[in-house]
Amino acid sequence: MLLEVKDMHVHYGKIEAIKGISLEVAEGEIVTLIGANGAGKTTTLKTISGLRPLSSGSVTFDGKDISKLPGHKRVLAGIGQSPEGRGVFPGMTVTENLLMGAYTRTGDFSKDLDEVFELFPRLAERRNQAGGTMSGGEQQMVAIGRALMSKPKVLLLDEPSMGLAPMLVAQIFSIIKEINNRGTTVLLVEQNAQQALQLAHRAYVLETGRVVKSAPASELLDDPQVREAYLGGELGAH
Amino acid sequence: MGAFTDRVRDRWATAPGWQRWTVYVLLFIGALLLPSESIGHFMSPYSDWASVLFFPVGTYIVLAIGLNIVVGQAGLLDLGFVAFFAIGGYSMALLGTRLGLNFWEILIAGVILSAISGVVLGGPTLRLRGDYLAIVTLGFGEIVRQTAENTDAIGGPRGIAGIPHPPSIDGVVIFGVDIFHYGVLDPRPYYYLLVVVATLIIIFVKRWEKSRVGRAWAAIREDEDAAEVMGVPTFKFKLLAFAIGASIGGAMGVVWAGKTISINPNDFLFMLSATILAAVVLGGSGNIPGVILGAFLVAWLPERFRGLSEYRIMVFGAALVALMIFRPEGLLPSRRRKAELAEGTGGMGAMGAEVPDPQAHAEPEGAAK
Image 1: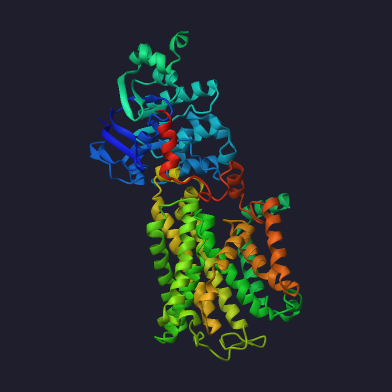
Image 2: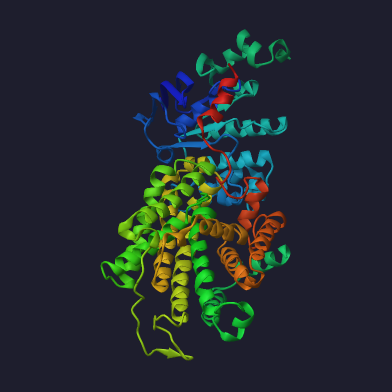
């Protein structure tokens, strides 16, 4: 297993947000966490990337226990994240944003930049534009491209579809597929369950801090309970 | 004005190295020529111009450059910056009168002591963000002053008198000024010393700004969580910003106390922290020429209009409010700062932005139940 979370508990003050989540991500997979607002998806992701301390349980990455490792060292271990709300640096240009992604690395990044620009031709056109002046979709592209610049083994994506038009969502999802085809493992948090389940190999359904279901994504697409709760019930059948 | 500054900035960005260096050298010489009688009558009709140039003008400029590292570069709101100025001042006073060290030795000691105090303040508090950090630093500024006031061993409320001047080298006379004679009468040698110290600080700060450290600060200012997941050790770099800002404040404290002869706790009121912060924000937080301009105006305007007596502070306050309405990014903002403001983070990074307190985060989590 590339990434393994065992019985993870996370607290905000006295309130327990994550009540013992266990999940696994194997190399080469796309795994998605779906669930409603407040189910603990973002917190789970933040805890894996080290932005939140866990109260108990463990996070193992690439065979090493990283539960106590600070966030910036997890980047070196091979975890790349596109954070919640994109987190593009507004005052930096697209290129500067991307180069921040390579902060932990040294050497020549022109090849890596070209690779990102090839995935997102839109960013190549706007490489000297300030991040803060770009549209939501473009910022999402910057956030994903920037995470790729650290050459991660696993890419954590926090709601890449948030606030985007349906056309753009489809485009972003096909690029995620492409990134995965090129060999990067993806852990995807989504509220847009329909799209996420079509893209992912496996999925976990989160409800108020617990995993209530885990199965191959295609099975969950046909699961009546999941359809009812996350895919708009019978309306989603069309 | 915006279009004009943009053009100047573009021209500057593409200017070859020799042109830049010519401008730097001219600015340095210009700064040395400032305490001239010919402009003194206009610039400061009420008090001695050369003295005004040392304090408040020069002092505020150096302090603002120091605070700019913390507020402008790393985006940490520090309301207790005067504490480091005080620690530098008291280092000079105590080490000079009790141990008999000379100015240059104390300058080094003062810088180290202030840097340590910056780390001591930052270590436990830099896990806070935004308003919470501001309140803690505000407290720290007051703690330092109160401690000085209530410790009889360091003079209590009366402070320390008889602080030695820097050692003089007599006989180097240029244009009728004995430039290395640090006496009581002529403030100009102190001003020249200040210009040299300020120049060195600006060179260091500029180099940091362009390095990996500067990039890390910019990332922290703009989005701390994103910086952390980019692999920036955010805590370490915030601590470094505090330590460097503190040592600049401390260095200025030493230089200032070296001229002043006597200091007391009331030289280090919260008002000074607030004034320096006003200088940074007014001039264009994050941009050194802007910060220098801001500090100059904040220091010079009240001196220039001393004739208006009490009203001058009121007019000054109104001018600050007007500026923040019409030019919230400051007089000479950096281009990056403008983009940050456009994004709506307030252009101050963590200042007044998201604060990780348990309640605020718990609510959306609990809402689904």
